[in-house]
Image (cartoon, rainbow, N blue to C red; front, side):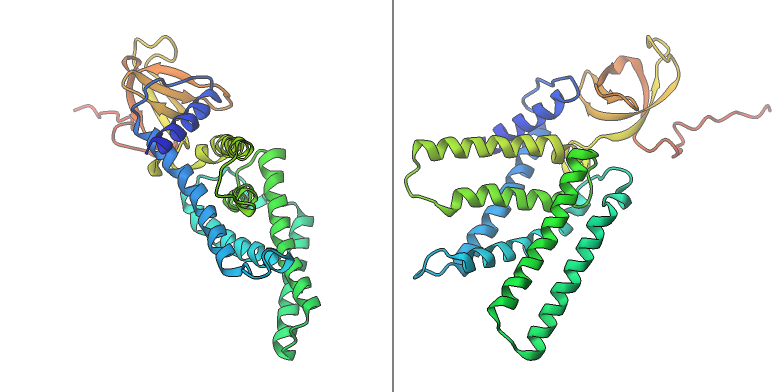
Length: 296
């Protein structure tokens, strides 16, 4: 529980810092939620790798290229399955239908066709050729590499969070965790502990920067939601007017909001807010609809 709380506090703090503010209340439920989600997203890859090693590692011959390929392939298959299941958890950026450039899509389709052909040929001829197995394994790994490259391009080049991102996390976390598990020793030496701490902070930074801000707020994440504020007549700006913005967080004292195009948050005290509508700007409510009474 201490690990979850400390991790959640770091994640929420990093998420707040990126918008230029810090909430110093250490008893917020969202801290536990952030730590819990990070623990799930880290512990699941660990369990998958642990089970893959148990199933595919030859206890007599130890680690070899065949074991490595089997573990990698099984892990990648599970990764894409988990990524598909986690899609409803995230709030993706607009324009996700154009998240791939054409040549990546072409390469992806070609690799899928080649993999299907090799599998079909091997099944019909019942050919257990080692060469065909290696080619098929390389083709399947190539499919995942292409998709990971597309996600890397989306996250860092065009800064867009797409449906490929959950799979990218599972693979990235798997590589980092697997690297530490591969040469696991019962005694944790100083250099091993140092590397483990470094990996922990790398994963936390990446999770806080890209993933936590896109987990839906209803699931305890940090995704912003669009709201419509009606300011009081005593507000210093836009007095008595309605303003559409994005809610980042709210406390007993006020709301941290982000205006369209802004990179830093604005704090609005509750005393300056008359009405808050938690919905899209095009939606209407009995509370934000202007009704003109007809003369009697």
